Length: 299
Image (cartoon, rainbow, N blue to C red):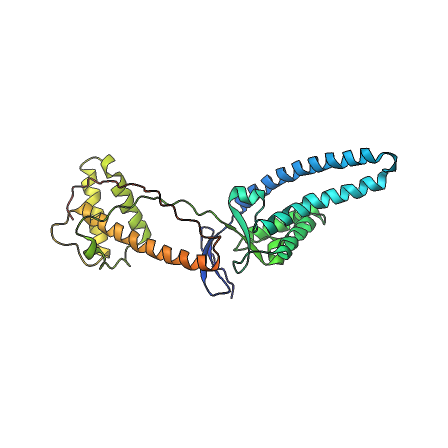
């Protein structure tokens, strides 16, 4: 069975050797191309610097330098820049080159573990031979490599397929940090809610409404609030206590949903950190502040 079955949106789940499911974002072709472009700039600078140093050595050698020496040094310089740089960086920096560091990407094994020297070397040798710069039928192999990346569900190129690696995003997209606070007195009732019928689209609509209702004019604000409260009430049980205003009902439902999701996320990150500490970012404890709503409709 394939250890990764990515859904739409470029994310997927890796099952590690310890049978822990890791939720990761597969790097898309756009971010990978940008990382390659950054690395090309680094390699070009390195080639110029090393070329200047090589020329200085040849000049100091004087008459003993001949065409064969120059050809040999050029080959060594090319191998160092095209192969040595990415292999050394990915081995020593945990699957990252300068370009991948800039774009927040990382090369890992297909089971989610960190790559080693053999993986980095295999990826790079295949890249130099048949991908970029492509020493064997360059134009044809470029097309084959690009087609492979686009067609593969994990975006693997030929080097990844050969080495058994994938490229993932280390940085997760920043979530909207605001969530409504639980209205006073509704916490015990909200803890008993059955939220299975509340889908993501409706929850997002409620969150948008609570965050922006002060900018809505009456009677549109009350009409929209009543409609959202009625729809949420038709999908969530039990009903709210008597006398709870509509804004408090919606805020309580959304706050409880956020609390449960945060608990699941914390448990998943704890499991991930136990297998791969470097994958889980440190939590940000910066307070986001509370925002008040002014929806005056009743549920």
